[in-house]
Length: 199
Image 1 (spheres, rainbow, N blue to C red):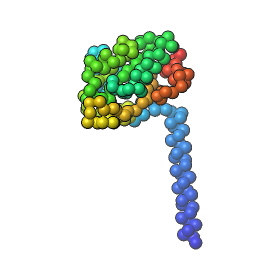
Image 2: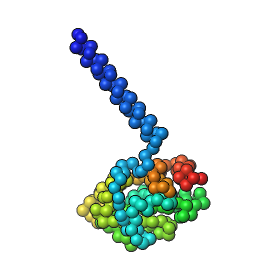
Image 3: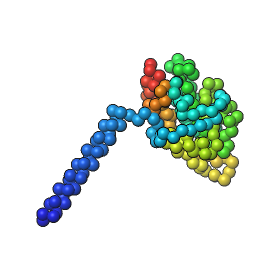
Image 4: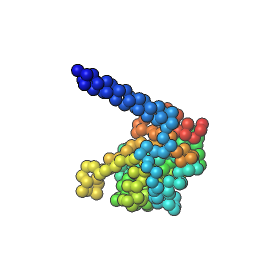
């Protein structure tokens, strides 16, 4: 009987400690949000920019940025997101110096720098496209906690790519400030972008 009572008390104490730890973690997350994209492990990355030269994590500092991962053969999510992000910037009367839009390809097997450059500039000449080889792509995906994998007929040249459909909001200090989900309400998305640029 005493053993059962002791065991029961021990379990109660244990669950109380678990609850306190969970509340503490939630408090820290809410009142001290992450300074980097979720999943970012601090590793560096380097990709070729369609505007020339190499783009690294250090280049995130200086200008607020909207960063989206996708691929040029994407049938819906990617073109919609690029159209929306350029429209948000125009609606808020912002210039590329106020807010950068950056597209990172997750399909280095097909997306050449020339293809990505032509693709992003079709939405706005100021959009920055970033391209790397497979290793560099995996590195930047890991840095942002982004997922992607081939889908459909993966042996065909017309395969699709399932990928994270979030737009990352990075402030002028290079710190993560949140995300905009695919097809998120426009007023909510605009409010997030306004906060990002300090409007």
